Picture (tube, rainbow, N blue to C red):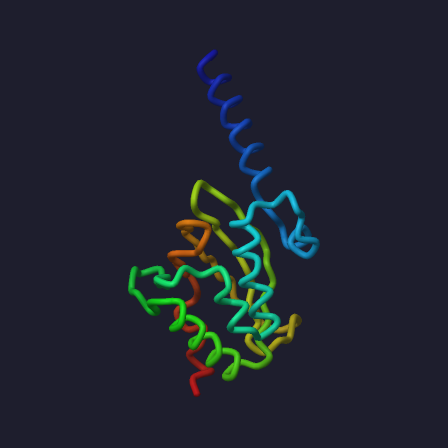
Length: 157
């Protein structure tokens, strides 16, 4: 019984510690100065999408960044390739909008859950996306993306 209480107490402390390292969309809007640079770099991705700024999107990317899909396939390699991809994306989806739902920092990674509307209509259908940003030397070196497989299927141009 003592072991069960100890485990429960440790789990509760762990959850409290994790929640103190997270940032909700409401906190993101104010850019809490106590947030880590990694969390702010990840939140910048959402701001860049909403501003339609490929250069802002690439601001915190390592020159050798890899973007991988959930199945492990590398879809983009290098900061310049990501910036060019985002320019094309913003051109093809001028009304796209993101909303940050949650950020959690764990060691050298930040996990971000966001919602995206390709038509910009917040009353319309949104897709959930999860990205795991891995940092090296304060820059994003890898982005692992989990999104619906058909997210862009009907928007190919």
